[in-house]
Length: 377
Image (tube, rainbow, N blue to C red; front, side, top):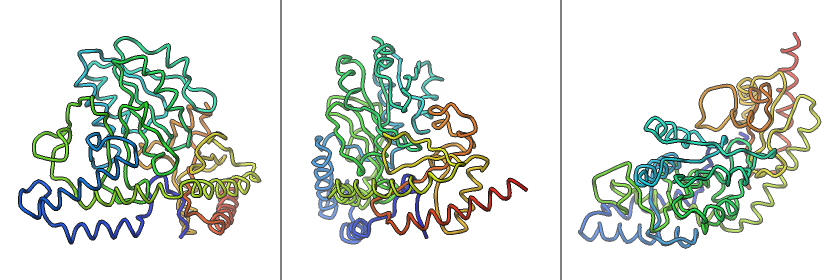
């Protein structure tokens, strides 16, 4: 099997799985219970939370555990909107966000909130001058991802954060799902940040929203004691412990992991350049973990299933995107309908080897030749 869909989800690190198993077996108590087993479970969560806070350089009180990035994004957007709507109802975002951003924004629009989209530069980065021009006295939230899930475009989060510091009534939310565990990040100029463990070799079903201490949110889930007032429910101790382990492991030797990904990306791109049918949608400045291409005359689903016959696994769009054949992100960058309807995403990991890239290219060529022949018939 050749796995090239790491941006959708990553395989679980065996050490992370062991930490989950150990927490399940050795800490059976409900962390909310007052007896000894409950206190031990609560102490373990406290320890894991301190580890996560230290890695991210935030306070432990700023950690909110969720079921994943989609819930974190919903909590951030709706939580800020409902809590601070007396200040204004204006929100800014980009045309390249994940569906878990657009979903709540569409919902808020129906409730009377106003959403504007920041213009992009040619390489997909936010136009900072346009951002400045769109900011108003009633702008309460700016939500911009750090790395786009389809194209790998990296946004200038530090610069955006510094601009927004001049607007104390406006909060800055960053969807960091595709960046945490892959590149160095800073939350210094960020008010809220979302991420999910299964993107950095952790388990599915656990994520986090970092919320700076002085910010208030209207919760999505009310009732029941938990680790925070902003998300009720029995804390998922084994998942929390395993996420702390996954985050710590993902940050170890990060520079060499990045170098391995860059090497694999270079081999892959060089190998694909020889095909006249292939166009590259990811800009040169994109995160090397993601390479988005379009194949002229070949439907993305057709190539996906052709490669699957060779036990090669890729993606068409973001795993959580709609089933539309047109990639909104690719169209925003290329303004080319054909490329937007024929794009595939190949996503890499530091686990990706030279041999895997070579095997992928061999399988890709076989599929492309076969599909091109079908088109010509």
